[in-house]
Image 1: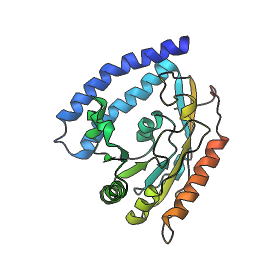
Image 2: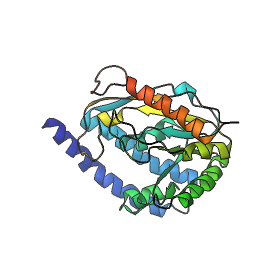
Image 3: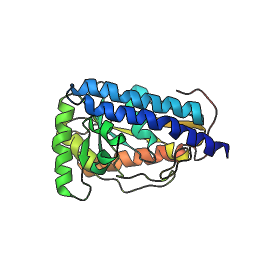
Length: 245
């Protein structure tokens, strides 16, 4: 009962802030992309802080020393909405590959649109992939990281989805490394659930995977093996001890 009440309080506090940043996102569209990114990601910082205050949900990262200086493609496990927010605090400025429909969500989508994500129609097949490759390559050339969830949709903690090779194909075209990321956010913030468990989300950043001279299929298989192996080592029940961020 207490967990449910705390989760409701989280959303009650987040809603007006989301509305404010949604409207602000439209107003600042004429500004340079990096300025907009800084402004709108203040919402992310608030959301994660408010999550800690209301629900007692914290996080810690291992492997941050593996993050290279140059822009890369991030391939991350997708279990929750949590990682779409918090990776903005772990990695340099980035754009996400996401479903176009999300940009139509009132307020939240307006704020996302001001970050210039790579929005795709998931039913467009090869056309969507070409868009990701062309736009993503340009973003990386401009100094932005690109975040891709290769499973395409949120997968329950402890489960595995089908990994797409699109992220590896982008890294090959952009001639940049891949950085794999594992976590167990779905244990605490399950998909399609308002309930937020207290505890500590574990995030593990892997060593960059060099792409030169390799195939997209081979790179995807290596990233998948690393991500799933690390996820299998993470707790599937809430961990409420230890230092956190």
